[in-house]
Length: 332
Image 1 (tube, one colour):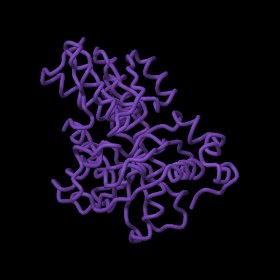
Image 2 (cartoon, rainbow, N blue to C red):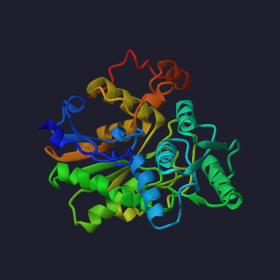
Image 3 (cartoon, helix red, strand yellow):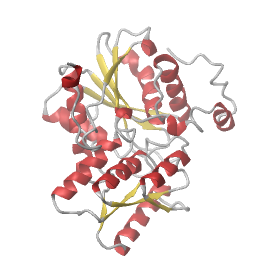
Image 4 (cartoon, rainbow, N blue to C red):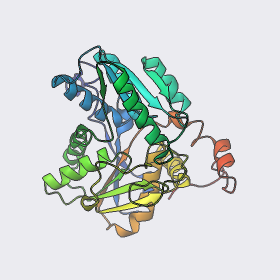
């Protein structure tokens, strides 16, 4: 019976992971490469950060570093904040999220619905911008609030460890026959979790990092970026470049084009970092042998970007020289 094949989840936390791997055909019609998208948007709060949030919190509870009723603090204006908000609500933990003016309004409403308290940082630091300012605020709150705990997505080793299961799911689904995995880089937790798993299991898989132009992760100076969810204004504590096969940097417009291409061809509405990876794959595909199996993450839901990436008026306002997305034939 079909019910026998349905996973029995005892809580919303149990529903995290085991996301579908989708063979994408329509976006890559002219390619002989096999492309697969790991639908991390199917996680309960809508992104791969559900895995990171739940893994860090559960380990901290099991090890006695936090207890129900304690206060969790994190710097995030996006998916990590939402993953923590959902998990904290279920695990009976208080949550304070430190955000900056770039927070998506839809995300802000969701955080409040989950019962999270939001602390706003309004001025960037001279070095490190808003991220550095948010981290300074986290330290201030940790000193002021008793029984508080920083999940620290930027340096907690449980971040990359959380994604060993993600890549294991991919390997099981494709019976280990994975030639390339493209991963968007930000904290580099997901990226290095995959890199460590590949090294530890002596896999042939080549890991390609996709960074944002204006990010400092792979060198260069921090510059203004409009699309959140990838890149960073400060170096990653996790990144070990020698474990990455190659990397590309994509622009804000690359992210927008990739999102629309994925939507128009496959009917999948995802966020900006996923769009950046789609465009990166397009640029990199000439280096990939035919019949190779390539995987990338469909990182989060696109509903949070309806006022920006999926709004032609916003695109025209911010990219006035670009032709209308609605009238263009984006795709392969």
